[in-house]
Image 1 (cartoon, rainbow, N blue to C red):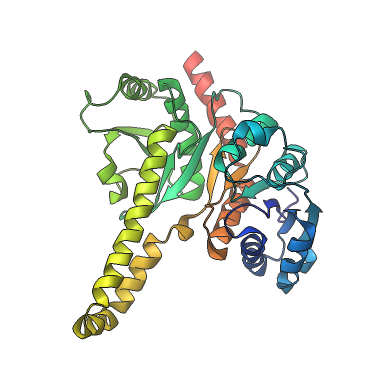
Image 2 (tube, rainbow, N blue to C red):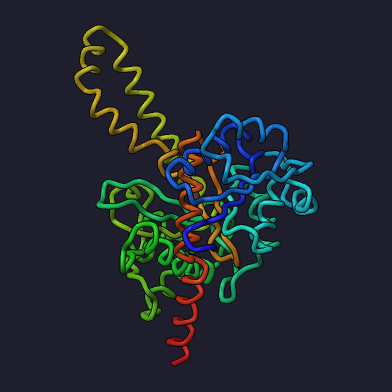
Length: 345
């Protein structure tokens, strides 16, 4: 990365909003940081038309035409064969070739994971990459959760490695010195859960040299209580938990909206409660926490929610920018090297 001038590769065709949403998000970031630069991959004509709407983007954008697009229905195996011709694949290759500091896409998660893993390869000491994201809590700060969908099946070793990567990530995005790590389980008692989860817990308890504080199991109804900094699980359970949290947030806001419009008295109550409801909406809006990162790769790839608005896309780009500046891959590698040294000693 050029000092103070991050370069982000954007899959402009990914997500529900396509180029309009991606370019608008990039424009928001450029308005705050005039040093940032972008390479936009996708349909050159569509992208250029959107860029023309945002004056802040003119000097900092390069458009590279991509003749093909990965759809939401494409299987990872199909996507891999089109890495060199699709907007998603070309953005990832820009990172591999050193032309960009990070890639951001709101497209097909499975395809993004498969192409990223093949192009960038997994870091030494890591068996599988994991998708990590931020969830809001009632505590002093938010939490990191992984895996959110990259690996549907994991063994105990995978989960222990996720804990190491999640701890390194939380130090950057949350700012905690000794992250409190917990494994997602069906109960907090030591005998609960599968053999894999219990074995992972044993590995983490015995690894006193890790740069984290392992504090046992946590149930899904405690996710938002601020009782952990990092929550580790397999991608199957993690994705279900994430979608449940997002769905519950929408349910609560929709229920309140319906309740406050049911009568004249409730509408008056809405006016009195409007500041508090606005705070609630901001706290529950997934766009404010958008931007999950694939940890464990030799390069930085950030996944934006497919339905993100420009504010959400800007947040995902902000995550990529911050992690590139903080050298997240190098910091994970340093932690792994120290762990290996201490384990050998």
